[in-house]
Length: 293
Image (cartoon, rainbow, N blue to C red; front, side, top):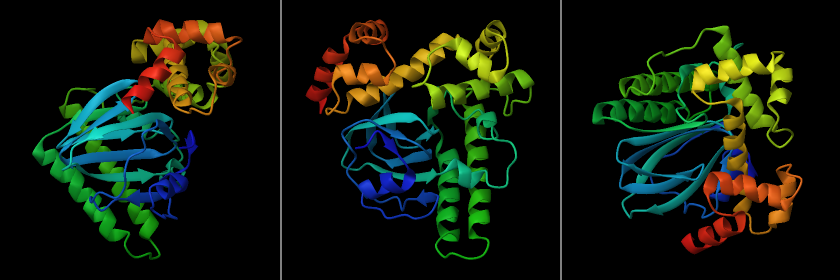
């Protein structure tokens, strides 16, 4: 599967021809998951109705079972693993530009604090909360069956309602206490994370992002630390590592080509970086992944 996908091309890979900027599944099994990691360049909400699925995100493995759901932002790298015979999920994919068509605040989704791990959250919720989310998906599916004058606007409203309900569930699960961020410093942090995701193949320098944000290096470190408990370097490294996992899943690329794409000046520099975080070399990681597929 191609490492960079748009919503239409991704769904075509699974035999679904969707021309809209959003897609709501029926809840019935519609495809065999790809064995390779891929990056979703759109927002995704997937909720398990029965059975279980092993899913890998940023080299972390999770079990998704009944009433568990994934909410993820663009740039999230996903790899699907084993699933049970009775696994069924409902899912929603949507393009950010579609949702924010009439919204002036580009960070409105990020401000809901949906993502525990920078770009995604996996949450186990109650039967009652899961039922609310599923009903909203059903309502969205119903309202978009026939294209009418205000169908897209109705779809945006329902999707926003769904995101707000997800934010409420996260608050109940004690992932975060505040629902909305309002301070300027938090806006800078959100902008920093988005810039890193968009420009990671251009620069790994904290100063580069500080300059783009028109703040000092020291001030950026303070903001990022206060909002995430991490340093800018850590977030940059985590984002770069996500790219490395995805590229290593493409057997057509050599380790040398991957190191070049990731802006390392040598294979050994890439190897040291990778081994520091994963504790094995890129080659060993690739061999291990082949054994698992």
